[in-house]
Image 1 (cartoon, one colour):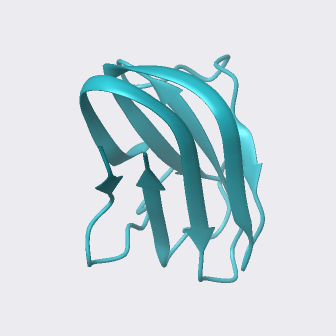
Image 2: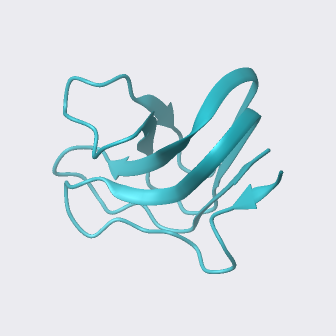
Length: 97
């Protein structure tokens, strides 16, 4: 099964995490996140809104994260957040399959 964050890019508006993809029941092994903006941020995979102490992966401005060999069993969510008190992250897209 293939999922995407949609045609409209995702962005942050404050320090709170933004849902990048809502993952339905299923099994997924690959995640690709593209940041077409210039501001860095972080992504996380978690069922509920991730707390500050969750494992966040750094997403470079203009960068791409490609994770292969995952074992994501839905339902869960992929989250996006900006660097604390930093510039909003804009232009983020994701695909999961």
